[in-house]
Length: 262
Image (cartoon, rainbow, N blue to C red; front, side, top):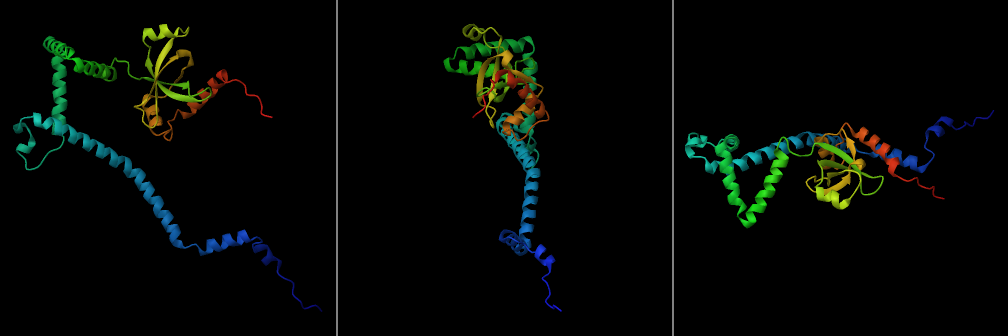
């Protein structure tokens, strides 16, 4: 009778057959619990930073703006009208309130005949100054365009093919180009002026005169497009799928068919 016991096959099946698997088991067994705790604490820290960061930066910017306006406006206000004249502490935001009230009063005075006459004489004086007149006219045109309710500020968003066929860039539609531009170009299609911002700083970019037929209009709002540019494409709005579908529909009309590479 053979008394030799056969090796247990179950043990062989459970044991790792390769050195790599054995090494992974050893590392997992020897990994300290502190690493799991560190990963969890790091995740908590990043989550708290995402929640608190935007709020803290927003509060800081608002506080900085209020202090800036107070620094400019408070010296122009008589001391007896300031709360600090009667209170032992400083009240922030008083200069901002006086500034907004002053702008409203100036706007109301400008609406009548006396105010318009005064503004006309002031503009005539500024127009006689060689350097000041160019700066004043430029700033006035910018403010009238951006802040006017009936002005030609950016109201629509579109796509143009840039920097080559098949690649699309977001542009803000500004309006019709100057008549001289259309005359010099001599294009058959009507032209349109667009502003192509650079990310993540949308205040810089290119002013492009492009045929209106080559601009793909989007239902994207100006605010959502600005967020997309500032975040370098990380904060995608809800209409991102529509933007991709429009690009696919427009692409085959301009892209030539590529020959297969042998």
